[in-house]
Each structure stands twice: as C-alpha cells, then as structure tokens.
Image (cartoon, rainbow, N blue to C red; front, side, top):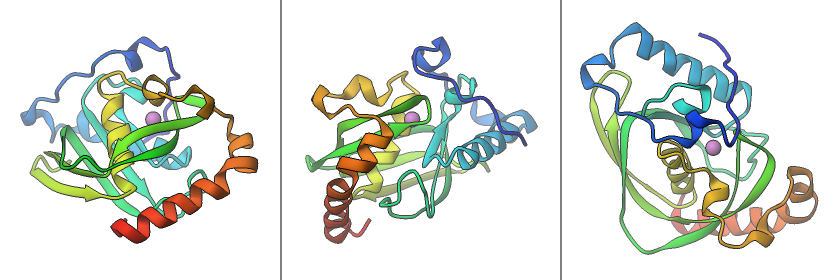
Length: 191
Ligand code: NI
C-alpha cells in the first residue's frame, strides 16, 4: 500500500481512454495493490473518489468514499466502494448543476450538469458483478469518477465558464449558497 503521485490535467494517461480490466485478473496481487494504493491516495488527499488513471494506472476502475470530508463538507456519506469496468446508465432526465473540484485539477472548481438518477454496474474487488442505483447528489460523484476513465475531466464539461473559481474564492463567496442547494437536494432525494 502506498500513497501515489496524482497526475494533473493534461497528462497523457489522464487524457486517454483507460482499458478494461480482464475479469480473470481482478484477484491478482497487482490489481489488488492498485486498489489499495487508490484508497490510500484518495484518503491522503481527502478526495471523494479517485480513478486509477489519476495515479497513472491506465485501467477502468475507481474507488469512492465520502465520510466527513473537509474538501466537500456538504457531501452525503458514501461507504468505500470499488468499481471495476464500470458502466453507468442514466435513469431519468433530472439534473443538477454540481459544483465540482478534482484532485487532478489543482485549485479550480466549476459547475457541471450531472444526472440525479443513475444505475452503476461493474465488478467489485472480489471479482463479483455488482449493480446498484444511486440517486441524489451522490450520483454526481459517480459520474465524475466514471468520466475520468474516458479521459474526461470536469473542466471539459463546463458550459458556464463564469462558474470557474479557485478553492479559496469558492469557500469565501460561493460555498454557503451551494451547500444550501445541496441540502435541499439531499432533503428531496435522501442522498
Ligand atoms: Ni476527479
């Protein structure tokens, strides 16, 4: 287990489409150690999730975990989950303007339109197929991590450039209003 360097926007491994993991390789120590490194690196950097290609591993898997996160204090909790070869299906047209940051995009945030009802499927780290639905604000995080595997970072999806701001500016001028929007969303959707 190790804390790895997080690649930054523009790095060719981050910009490329990651490859599928061979199902029969999931149990291999190498793949298991990737997952351990992703978890360690995510926790060390206080990320809400991390995709393998953010630490230079060009394969399709990500981990998500949200507890009491100082980077995103308004995010509802999500237990530690690993998804290998994920696919995301959109379940409805309900969307939300999600203000996002990314460990690979230092000191920048902006609004991205995300779907609020999705179905996630893929393998867990034991190699078992898993499938579940995610609703509400939490759904945004899954779409963000899944985007990484296609070389897509949040700035690529921004449609309102005036929403770009630095982290300190967000915290001083925009976080209170956004956190209230999230609270309303969580009340409506339960997550
Ligand atoms: Ni990210």
